[in-house]
Structure formats: C-alpha cells, structure tokens
Length: 271
Length: 218
Image 1 (tube, rainbow over the protein chains, first blue to last red):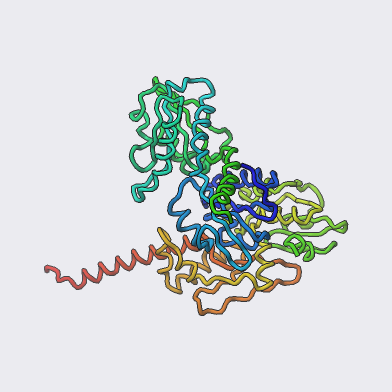
Image 2 (image 1 turned 45 degrees about the vertical axis):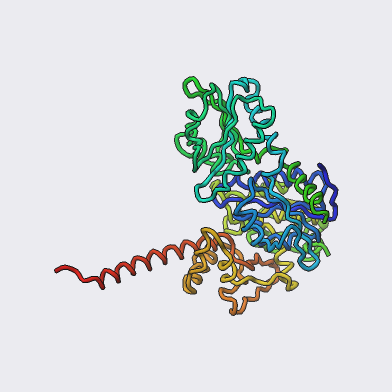
C-alpha cells in the first residue's frame, strides 16, 4: 500500500556486519527504491554493526516525524531490546523535543512474507521441476538459547501449509537446532527440494554457512559480492535435486513490505 | 538552514576543505567536487563517479579488495573524483563515504550533539556485550590508544567516565573534523575482548592462589 508522507522521514534499521560486505546491501537497495518513489521526504538506513550506526543517525534526519522500520526477520532480542535501547525509544511512538518517532513492526512478520516465500521457491524452480514432486524448506538460524528464535519461521510454514500450496511438503529447518537443515535428505522424501533462506541478506549465514550444511560447498566461500560467479542451480545429489536461493530479504518486493509496515502502523495507532 | 545549505555555506566558491581523507572543493562556477586528498594535485586521469551507490561501493573496500566495515579507517581508495552542482546531492555523496559525519559536525558545532562517556555506552550493553563494562580505566585507555588512535581518523570527543571533562574539538582552518561523540561497535567489541582476557587471567590467578593455599603432599 503506497503512502504519501513528504514531511516525514523513513528510517530502515538493519543489523549490518563487520565481516560480510553484503549484509547491509538489501537495506540500501530497498531505501533507494523507496526514495525514488517519492513517498517520504527522505529515506535513511542505520545499522547495529555498520555506519551510520543507530547512535549516529539522528543529526542526519531533518524531518521532525520519522517512521522506523526494522529490516529484521522476526520479533525478538534485537527488535524488542537492542533497537529501542540504542534509539532511545519509549513505545510505539516516542516524542523527544519536537521529534516524533514511530516504531513499526519488523518486515519479517508482515503477512506478505508468506506469499513471497512461495513465489521465490517457484521462481527458483522456473518450471524445471513439478512443485507437487518438490519439498519446500524454509531455513532459519535457530538457536537453542532462545525458544522464540524459530517462531517466525514456524508461523510462515504453518501459513503456507494452511493455504493452497503447490508443494508436496513444506517444512522448517535450522542451522543450529533441530530439525537441522544439514539433514535435508532425511527430512524430505521427494525427488526435488527447494530451500529458501529466511534471512535478510546474503550474508555470512545464508551465503557462506548454509551451503556447507546443505553439501553444495565443502567449505565457506568468499562473500557473494567478492565472487565472480553467483552459484548455479540446481545441485544434484544422486537421485535428489536441490535448489538453493538468495535470502528472502533480497527480494525487490521487500521495499513494498517496508512501506506497508508504515501504513500498518498508521492504521493501528492513528498517530 | 538545511544541512545541504550549511555545507554549501561552509564551502564558498573557489575554496577547499579537508575532510578525513577527502578533499572537498567548490569550483569557481559553484559546482562541488570531492576526491581523495592525495589526488588533490592530480590534473587528469581520475575516474568520474556520479552516484551515491557507486561511491558507497568505492568506500566499501580498500585498494586490495578487502572489506572496510569502518568507514573512517584510513585506506580510502584513490583515483576518482565526484562532481555535482546540487548541494543536497553532494551531501548524499559525502555520506556514502563518511556516513553522517558532516551532520555530526554541524550538530556538534551548534552544541546539539553532546559526547557520551565510554562508561555510559558500555554500561547499557546487554547480551554478549554486557561484559564490556567490566574493563578498568587502564584497559579503556589502552582501547583508545590501540583501536581508536591507531585505526580510525575520527577525533574523539567522549570522555571515559561520567565525571571526566569532554575534549572540545575545534575545526582548524581549511578542515572539517571527523568527529567521534560516542564509542562505536568496534570499541564495544574490543572492550568485551579485553574484559574476557582479564576475566580469564583473573580466574587463572584465583586457581593459582587456591592451589598455593592448598596443602600439597610432599
């Protein structure tokens, strides 16, 4: 849903990385798309691990009303604790002097993500395999330290199953907790498997770590932008065929999801 | 006055400013130009870069292709120039290389960006960084010396403790300072590393003391 807020700024909040040069790229790409649409007075990005940091961003923004959208995959430690603390937010709307800050939901929990996962998986197959003979695995990080870490992906998988999915099976898997993505051959019984990483960027985890767990690479490669050739699908393992794609957060339609989180905030809170 | 207008006002036609490793200049016709300061006297042969995106890519890696996560680390690539007649676009291009640094200086110069003591930054950390604020003052000094002074071009305005006076940064003639009003993610990470080492040494020494106090069989 497009918005018209020429007197407001949009601030996209990302994690960023001190190790991987591609982590912040989707934020910048989506910011550029949204800025060119002219829906906001200005569009900015700020990061936890890159510059401009959450702490550096305020002098850059000249509008007095700012919508903050976390470009994060789930609600959790970052969106509930780190971002509010570093940005000094006190609730959905924070007033600081003449500055009014609206803190929107993260992109990953937007309902559009469900359809996007299916769309990405079908695009990857590109008609070369029948979805009814294919399992869709949505893969995330997962950590035994936080039971909420798998919730966002489980929600997406349940939503896809509840709809009219063309895929034979839809399941979730994780890097660091069961069901492990490294066990994809045991977790699925179809000849074809398509794996969509539920991550914001083609960074350390989705581009470098998961391919090793899947068996596509024998060891972590250089970052995507530092390689001459992006990986080619599909990958054959005996009688099984595997497709592995870019992080869901790199999809250009995420720019629309970011804007829609602003519209959702207005609809919910009527600021 | 907008930030872009402020930038234009600080750079009248026919003048130049040094800004970190950049040389900013205003041509006689009023257009803005930026290039590496070490290319200041290069007459030709510089690659023209005309977009924010391309400048961000330029600043992302060093001459050897290595990732530069800290934009104010020395090592900005040479051999390019960027030129525009629009002050807002010029500011956006500078932000691609030094994100937010002009805005920070403009706010600081007006007294609107008070420095944050290191202890306050470290003290609010949670999760894996909670340990960072256990460093002592000598370790904090070491962090500033070994990490900040050695690897970053910013001038530090933040004090270590709440009660310490903040350093006042002033702009020398012909320079725009790269200002640091609060310790960054690299400093917090290094503080955590120093704290971890100190803790393991301390644990080690406790074990040693315990061993010393434990009677040994002859």
